[in-house]
Length: 183
Image (tube, rainbow, N blue to C red):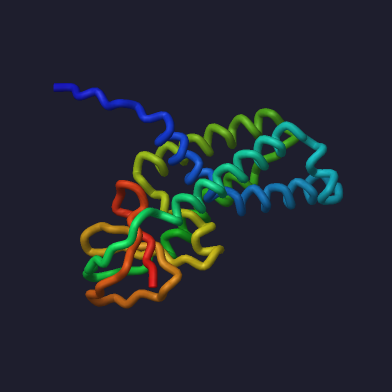
């Protein structure tokens, strides 16, 4: 029998913001590429398509703030984990998969913006529905490492974790399998 799910608009927006935050470094690269492509200085790139850049800046700030809130987590508990493996290479591979198509963006061409916007939304749909919030290059940039346990928990830590069984102080992130490792 079909079961209807309550659509949580706040939760969906929060997940979308976490996804968008993974694009912040890419937005910077696109900005620099536009200066080279249009043969203008970095300050003049903004004026090629002000609306586009204002939207990018606003959503980047909001998504970065929500990422920070997400990383803060709630509570603290001691949990035991088995067989911890690093996922940092997977995070980098994920970043590379969307780097090339998005760098083809030309902010002065509405068709290029539309095409890349559709691609951005399709990748986002997969990212959000697959709960791939840990596939965020910003985590690596700000010093976090991403790990997965045998039980499927994702550990996000600034501490180097071993591949053995260990008991860790963690802060669960929301109602999920994501945990921030604390000292």
